Length: 223
Image (cartoon, rainbow, N blue to C red):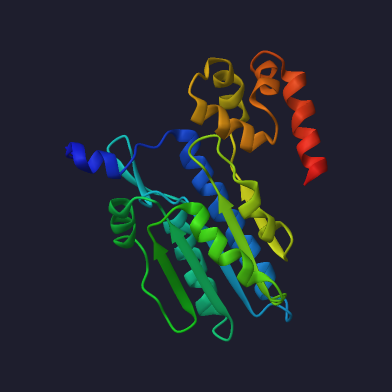
């Protein structure tokens, strides 16, 4: 049986979470192969700025999460195209989780490199984002998977304006269920920043699906 400390580092995964791991893995596999066949692509960059410990438990078994699965997929890609570079940025704000993650990753090879950090997700993206300008031959994939409803749009702007892909995993159902129960000012600010509007205007989302859909459409138009 895992110790209480270990259970804080390695989370339990639900079936739908495991399916998400598999879907991202298969998508990255197809994405990488298609780009590497293009002569204008000199290399790939994958970024997971909220990667957890890389492994989970389900029914007593260890299950590989997104960063470990993607690292193995991209290592195979790097070996297939040795003349092109593959870089992977993996980050979590917990040093303990990052230390666990490192145990499950493949080692670097000539054209394959993994950069693992333990810092705030926004700090990482603020560093990487500006580096993308003017690098049209380098294709990136940003996996933005916050554990709560917090989306910091300003740090995503450089990624949305460059040649690459951004996948945001955001559970809108969690927002609709929780927003009418929010009391803490910090939490209200989090929702306001995510949906780019005053918190008071968000309250109808908790009971009116149409109101939520209309606000999402407004945000899309702004971006």
